[in-house]
Length: 329
Image 1 (cartoon, rainbow, N blue to C red):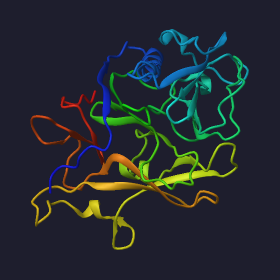
Image 2 (image 1 turned 90 degrees about the vertical axis):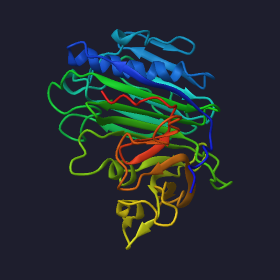
Image 3 (image 1 turned 90 degrees about the horizontal axis):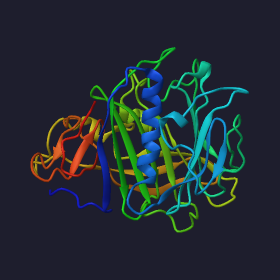
Image 4 (image 1 turned 120 degrees about the vertical axis):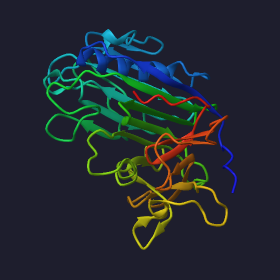
């Protein structure tokens, strides 16, 4: 079996080395600002800042108030705080990131997505909202953190990897700290989706630091992303990644600590999308160029091992790569 052919053409802004300033607040500012800036500066201009707030002012496109990391400020309740609405013009999806921090701790965030309705409103003390919004709130004492636990969290160096398809329909980012996957996100139009799906987009954002004893595979597969039936539709809900299973519940890949006896190669296992939420129930296509790794493949392994390095293992997944050595801190 040969390596799979990439189904999309990928653009890369990887191995971004974000060295610590020595301060936890500034390090979180830098990471979040760099995620934003990497999105809007990717070739093609498919991501843009639709609306932004720097905790004291609000502006609409084409103004971007997040001019540098000092514009990214946390606050809660009636205190001013920063937020931003990023719009993907290729798939019509938007995401709203709000720096809503318990005790102004920068390891907490509200991160919401909209498939079609779009985010409107917003003041220096309230984020914009969308009628079809779904997402995740990380706040102290409840649902974890988007980076590290603790009050306050720690200072850190990290590596940010951003990749996007050349048509803008698939965007992924990975953040590594000290060899561990710290944070990751996906905004993507699946392939082979039902023609009746009029808002075909899958969104997922995860913190993977607090996943013990879960694996990173469980964090993405057992913790769902989100999907919507169509524009203005009340039907929206969870979408799960899926793959081949063995023995009822376990993924085939979890048994493969060996190569295929017949072909002599490691196998890549495709990832489909499935929802059991009323209104969008069923198989919803699959994620292009995104595979679950066999158990015997180590994180950061590349395929081929030398030379082109067309694929890299990111914890439990195999994703497209650009031939470089992946930084992990």
